Length: 358
Figure 1 (tube, rainbow, N blue to C red):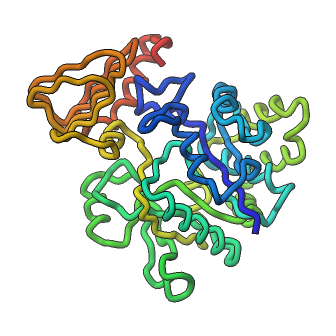
Figure 2: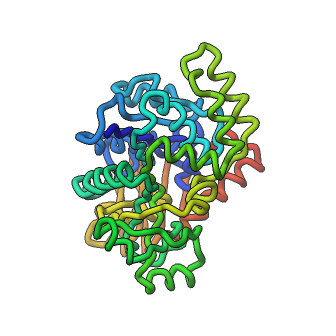
Figure 3: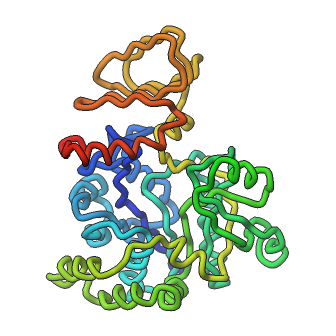
């Protein structure tokens, strides 16, 4: 069984402003370690894949940075989309690229901006998922056992009966639900049959492309037209022309919610998608006052906050539950429970033509 890994690394990371910018989004930053998020993502695949088996899909403006950050990944395995079109075109493009080499190979899709605490368990789940999808031809997604009612994640409802047919930890998916309101998220948590949608998928390449052909025929035909052209001198031009014609759609909407043969395996390996600064706080080491800091911080009765200011002292008095991000040209201060709204700052900066801060 051949197993490839595709790492989606094309996001902008708007919720991580002011550290994450167009030229250097969060997956290229060292958010919660000494290494960048993309470097950590690749490192945790050691023992599962060789560099030749890893494909990175990014954007045109970030490809050179990635080539520099991960020189051990073959340059031809770093494919740059001309612009973002959501996850279905991204994953489909990777599948078409790899189909010529191994049409029945397993393709595991992971993201460049996740963190994993228990890498041994993570690898076990990926290996079990790959073996199951190869044998059954089912599509598998990894669902995370929810730790709280959270409105920042999509949810997967599963059917407990499937463990009698396959494996005690693999279940049939009943429904996918996009990010709910708090009341709905609390109901999901209490029900016990919902998992967080991690955005990680495992499938055979031939099975996946059949699903594209059935459910997204226009996208399928457009991407298949690129087959065999990836190493042509004018490939970038052809890819850009193709992306101008296709519609952006997520793989959740385009495939997962339409197909009837999706399984979910429970993941309990300390996963976080680090989607907001509050998620960074929750996954960070904290002092006796519940503060997580990067840089020098003087605290007087300050609690449960995340302070990032590596180049300038920050002093706080009588604050709690705040996010403080201090960079050379911008300062962000917000309540931790409002960190989802940081992305709205980008729209305001655009409206004011503050392009140097984007």
